[in-house]
Length: 242
Image (cartoon, rainbow, N blue to C red; front, side, top):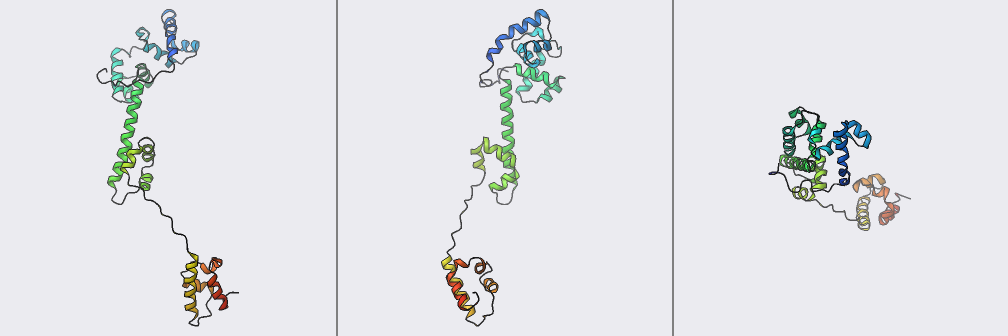
């Protein structure tokens, strides 16, 4: 393991370092009194896995009551754990339970942090591959909204952990431009001139709805009368409104 083990693995400081100083009392109770792990957990208010891990870390080989876990089994478990095998596959390979495999892995300093890093790297590669495969298989124009809707989980995971990479792969954002404000004075002049041309032909029997339909059917003469003063004056002259 020394040839492939990274130097930064397990560099995190242990917050419970002072607790490991009490390993002597655990080993004393086991060796001298032949106390079981369950009774030790009840006596010192610790879990069975914690006590077993603590004893394994201090290399008390005589404690190992399980004959299946020997030195060669430990080396095989640790080598498979370094290469990224899951707990289920390691347990099936060695005919052990997942709890026993987890106890051996946690007894090796830095192995848990290394496996966490490998799992995160694998998840990162999987999400990146999903985004790239989706972009490559699309024949239509790709937008950020389409990628987010199709690859929801991968998009948000990469946006949180690999934001720079995601922005480099996705197309540039399209800015939304606001529509210009309506110039009601100009619209009033246009509508009054159109209505004047229509009414000058002698069609005085037309209603406001029909006149509004001639203007495009937008409801200007029905909803926005106060914004069209010239048009309203013209309609009053023609006695179409009161």
